[in-house]
Image 1 (cartoon, rainbow, N blue to C red):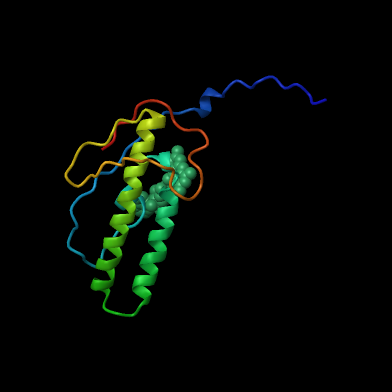
Image 2: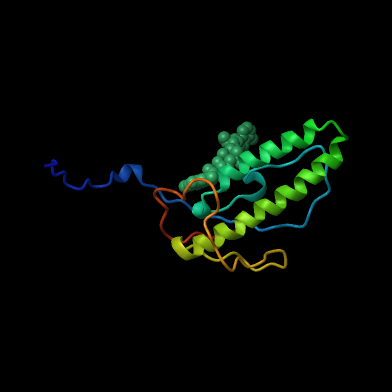
Length: 139
Ligand SMILES: Cc1cc2nc3c(=O)[nH]c(=O)nc-3n(C[C@H](O)[C@H](O)[C@H](O)COP(=O)(O)OP(=O)(O)OC[C@H]3O[C@@H](n4cnc5c(N)ncnc54)[C@H](O)[C@@H]3O)c2cc1C
């Protein structure tokens, strides 16, 4: 016999709106000694539960590229190519999931944006436990 606990009312001081944004791919840039990883390169809605995973994967890939010992610019160029590919693959999945389950606006069309035809949750942690409601405005 468990104790019957009445459903708790939400503490409205703990609730806040969250605007959902999706980054849009840009053409590759000239590689320099300054590079990007994680959300700085490929921010996405939380609908794929993949942003933190990708930030950590980027960090590992960047470390491996630089630890290789060769000249840094080719290593960074190779890192950026793979980071952009994997990052924006997840961005497309996240945007499609967000449109489907969170009411997120679809991403703007762009020649660099391929449609995500079969959205599936990305690997890694499950999506957010308390997904934000409302319509985000992807950028
Ligand atoms: C509601 C929600 C749910 C999510 N759920 C998941 C999930 O289930 N799984 C998942 O993998 N991801 C999830 N994410 C995404 C994940 O949180 C991000 O993708 C991840 O935190 C990105 O890491 P990052 O290091 O690139 O950027 P950040 O975590 O944003 O780190 C950047 C840091 O830089 C600091 N900074 C900024 N400007 C400066 C400056 N000028 N000088 C010094 N420091 C500066 C910031 O304060 C911040 O600490 C979720 C995100 C949200 C909003």
